[in-house]
Image (tube, rainbow, N blue to C red; front, top):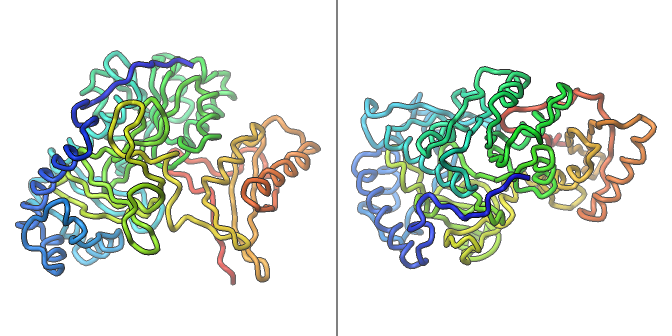
Length: 437
């Protein structure tokens, strides 16, 4: 595995500020955000005035501001199509349009000014430098470059950092692998699912992805790169260190991993992080809760105290890399609305994936939760590699034992023909819940 050990920063000063100094920095940026928003952003001017807010508040009074939810944004865009009213400047000031993937509902359209988009690009510079990527690296971005925000920022940040940056847009997976074999990039950008898929296709082409020269892979779109067994599988297949990144189209790239790889740091120079107990709505200083974010750099189309729905365990202790930014230990645990209840046990899809990826025979999987009489059942559909049908029952039993030992679940297991389960370049949704009929 090809690695660099030197700790690298995009902005060492802001990333290592003492907590009190960091909060002063955030407070200055919060005022610079709220002043124009209160003056000319119709969505937030109305929302904040209804809460009695007519002028900027200090950081200590952030909780006076109301939460923002995805449902509000969707409703606003439906009422005022196509962009809604969350625009701080006249429409002619905006130069880019992206939208969410729509995997969890109605897609959201998001406009950016040049300055707003550059803040997103700069957030990707934190991602790169956190992973030790910089001048002299060759970055291959395996992304279709559609309207989804995705890895546009990764592609535009690379050249600004002095990286040779190559697009994989408009290519099949096979063409991308041949391209990578020819140019030998040192960095791969993709979803974790797609990194596994490329390695799978590479084997059928006689291309060993571990010999392509990649030393770093960076992943977003789903939590796979922070799932230990999935990270391990990617690193073995690519001969590289796999890094996680957290972001949202409507929010930007708020999380990046450092080389200590304990989980993503929250970029607190660009975002104010709050963590809430999802039941009581009370703040959590250290520990598990829902991530609530305020984007300080996107004045043009802001989100203030945005309920992301993502759950994480947060620590604000200084990291061994030297950063004082908060850390999401072990990555995102999942979305609050992704949690499944099976026979009275609450479980996140990531916990199931972490077990299945421990079995190298499992090439792909799908989970289906169904209602059987009075209880829920989990059915796992598995594709296997290099495994005869006669060996499948033994593998199924090993998986059932591991699931019961770690999660107290006994799933049903069935095997699917090779290549029959869906693969995705972007976000992959492997679990479905079928309500009782």
